[in-house]
Image (tube, rainbow over all chains, first blue to last red; front, side):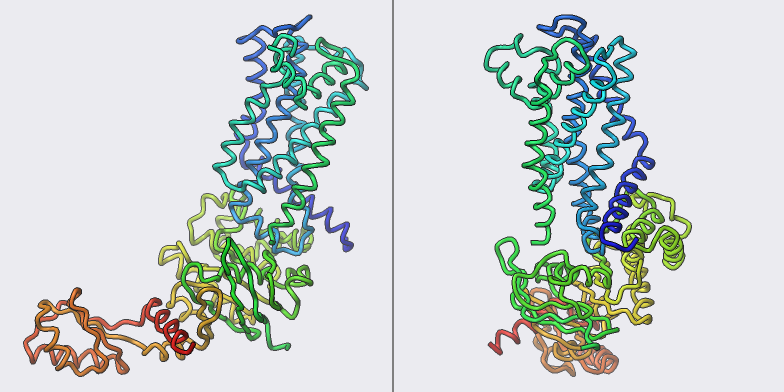
Length: 256
Length: 313
């Protein structure tokens, strides 16, 4: 444990553990974070109902859409956490320590990805209880989960970048509000065919819709289109190719 | 070289459209406490952020513990502790969790990090509160934990950026006591403050900064002597007596402020001046509302020093 690589790994693990320790301190916040998408699922599944343009069981269409939406909303959580750290001065202490520079960001992404994976598991469990079934086989099932997490990973780095650029709690609020229309301007709840032409086009191009469509395909439910797996791979990777280096550069620029 | 802990030569930094540091020079001897005194916006925090490798200077040479803060940042970080203006702690975690985390990030290893956290909690009187989340700490406790966090590896050089700003008098006394205990142990401390009293209490030498440069440098006594030392203020009941009182009081260099019915003068022998003034007023039958001996305020030191640099220019 003395090489730079070993230090980088141990620092990243320490930073991840920090996040996990915070969960232990704030179980209610964590619980609310897990329950909120479940509430949305129940609300749209039963209260609002519908699913315009969907052929087949709505729940089979809705559950993959909600999974994708939950991944998109993860952006908010990441951004809030990074903004809080920056404003509390604790990041200053990290940066003045002889620790691996990137460990702060690695710890953040590891913890957020773990939280999102747990969120997916909970939501999938609730979906099963509501009668949703994945019919694509275990390989396709894992592929769908992988695509959803890849999308979450792209959202994560956008969140880190926005927090580093905005850096102030007031601007987090703006993003919190904006994430709703962006999340809802997708095919999470209804098919683009059921919408006015221009809106359908916007919705179809939303990267979140690509992930949702590919997941539906892999889960073997309605609303899936084969071939969307590539789009669901390409979009998040393209977003990562832009926002990962931007976020890392922005973090390094804190010393300018 | 080995006797110098901090060397700053011609440091410049533009920040937010103005020169936060404008060619600042500073030398701090190893094992001493050095105060950096100045008003808000003088460049104190920028200086500390550069010294602690958080910001890069635009120009100039900056060395801490014999290492360059830009090209040898990692080497510097191994040897410094930082207490910033805002508590640099994870507020949701407990005090012990914070200290253990910082110990691990210093690569002490899990066991030593745990042991060190326990030592520091005891040393700073926080042993009973190690499990409480930091958010529930009082201001003074939080500051002490913050200080403990900056001492996880016994740094060679410790930076304290306005360590008592925003604390009540009790919290301030707690922090002062902790800093004094440290300085016995040979750590070099650079302390920024807006309070003359704080610099006076803690620092062996003081640099007064204004607009990103050092405008004066010396021991507290030297600086106070340069400003004329202590002052006596006499507030009269009747402004009409100001002229008469100014003439008969046994004081030199009296300043008259009619709006506040105030006479103010520098003094050298505090007690002699006080009794002399009281006696003279009684004999003349002039009623005084208040007679106070006081130190020069930061404003006075500061105005005096900046005036002097203007004259010299």
